[in-house]
Length: 258
Image (cartoon, rainbow, N blue to C red):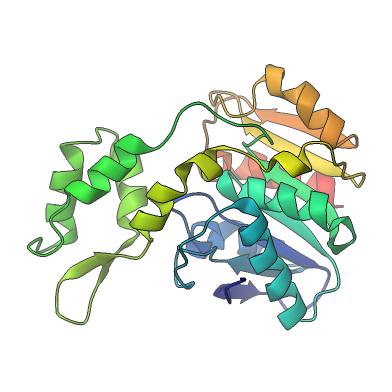
């Protein structure tokens, strides 16, 4: 069953562009890019289920998350849209394009392939669970607990965007950790019934040159499913090229979208 997704809209004219964030992210991660795209198009940044201000749900398979986006499009009377997805959101975007190709006019996938990855996010979950929410008094204190499990400051700052005050004066995580943990095999995989499907429209894959999510070995299986795919690498970026190299990222987007 689909859930009603929270979204942020930028712009009033032009074609609709839907942005789907990655795991532990939210619509707000894409504000800068969305505002630039909204100079000529109408941009909808969505909070996927169990993230941001969208409802929590037990199930997090890509069929369910794509169905949420479809329900959002029906509610907003969007017949078709350019769909841009990063990381987990990239897999949602690919699943949507493969299952409902007429709804996706063009596809942009950022640092993700339609494959099953062998790693997981156990270290991140361990770090988030390590923060004693019932006693922590500030974001700074929460970061100190996170630092005991996660050494990378930028990753901690990204994750701490999910720490919000609750009604009892304490803190809580906005993301649904229990559901994410339970669904990790689905999140790291890709729906088997979509592997033989094709999406024929123009598709842009942007990857970070220092990331391992879209290496050359994944291009061949990706090309079989997305035969009109174009691959672009931002050499000095890792998994977040839109944050690490925003100017180069926007140049690639504008070139593709024009």
